[in-house]
Length: 369
Ligand code: ASP
Image (cartoon, rainbow, N blue to C red):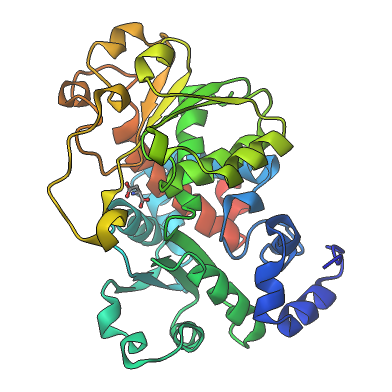
């Protein structure tokens, strides 16, 4: 597909309605962005993957998140202003996989924006369980909502949703709240916002260590894709052999001249990086998802209490959460301002608020408040 004329919104719409699922699915991520972003504002409409985001949009999301945070400090007029922004928008949050933070954070952001919402957290009570196709389910959801937030174990479910919605009369936006082991773009956005706040808006030139289950951790995958939007970034992958970062991400980084190197011991690099992004070993993917008592984490991939002394003064520790024993418990409440993972949770609310406001073209109203 060669078509990339962003100025011709009607033609984009026509093509989006005609393209088959196979052709759409087969397109490269950056080629299909034209069918996902708003052709006028060029900001995301459907939010499926990190490759849709450029530096302008990332900076915008951070600025809107920051401004919304400030506005909420004004408990009367500020909060009322935000609550009026999308009072007429109804969200449907469909979460077919476990979720605490992402679910609560979308719900809270929607509440701050005055939106109505419906939640489905148990796919066994939706009609997919009766054999309805996913495409039909999505069309049905769209009859009752103005925004869909989806978390699904099928990595392509959210893309299928965007494709079928583009063809339908009710083309409502869909946001990926986690697609199997593939991507979690809104987590990556909130990670960026956390780095933005930690480094006074200056993310360029930083070195980030990603630690743990890099093969199946969708959050590190989405964050790695966003690195192309910043200057002079470096990544260090710290993972056990069987859980190393996959080749698709590595070739993406090579293509975009983002240096990365790999090691199997966090201690070796902890004193050299600006951010350490810890992750959980996702053993639910082992043994067909059956749960066992989790094996204790290998100490080489654990953040030990004494690493706080080795870390650079301005460096931060992030974690998408939930966590187990990959971070020494004493780090949690030690009061060190470099422990950023609890802040990440609040940052997620404002990032998702900023994203939803931008999708519905309310971002300037927030910035102008
Ligand atoms: N909360 C993150 C996710 O949904 C990370 C995790 O589950 O470990 O991908």
